[in-house]
Image 1 (tube, rainbow, N blue to C red):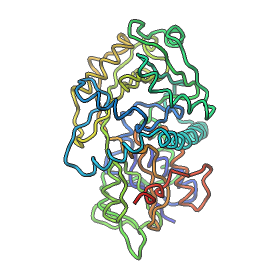
Image 2: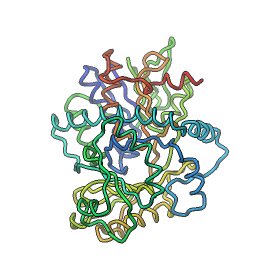
Image 3: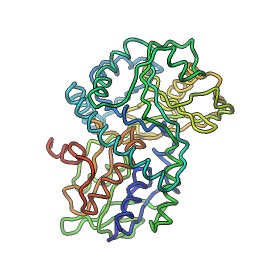
Image 4: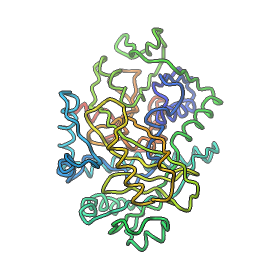
Length: 418
């Protein structure tokens, strides 16, 4: 049985690994020259199931409106005439209601916690080093951000997720290099969450896949999916048909262009994000664990000898060019918390498109077309969900029952709306 995986980001490579484990002959098609060269390359590096949260949350519409004239806004809306954007925004607004938020967050955390288990199994079995740092801190500059986070904290309590509210003095003991003059009223500490290099993990797993018999084909564009007799039979790649018993689309935001021509419509929209990576000569001057500034929605993540600062969400502009305003925000937040940690003046900058669904959870598994499966829509939590999502989809393709409940994680939630 031949399985064709479209996309070689962390989600696609994890899917390929688990498919090979299920006994499939696996080919991965990627238009770039290697794995993890787009969304998986410069992300925040955070694996935080406890923080996995939909953007569609109570209070968010008002908060987004308040950012419209803020040069350092964590969310930037650039209105266009694109129907896809306005459809996405309409669905997103509906999901900001409290009960919908609670449901969506629960779904996201279900797959994220399962994924963390699978990540640990894989790394222990395969000996993969991804520059792991345990623990995650959510920093609150003011009371307003603390209040807006109350529903998320309540869900952590209900789910029994270990967490602790910290005073500024307690934060300083955990993070001795943190700048004390920056306003801080409290922090939420998630000791079981972690961070690490998504790109390093993906490259190592790709090597393991190849040793296990997976074939990677780079610099090849999937032009369209092939349909015959009511089922997907493979894909047209570089003008040549590639036959497959199962085709798995894991092409992030580009998945839309493959799915819509064959009648599968998902409100998947690319939301731009930015990051900088800078050398950190002395790790003692930087963070000891990943943290996020809740006011600016900017994450700061330590790797071995470098620091990653990532954030900003930009809707309405598909052009992947760097924004000076977004980069200034990243530099501001980095300087606010760790002014002496890194050589920020010589930082490397990155921009990428997060494949976002308006309600938050990804879409995993089978579609109405036999032979076609999806692993899409992970948004800003693809690294946190990749290992579990890959295993779930491989189980479904192989006819096995996944180990977790897939309620709300399949295409059925969107088919019911249409």
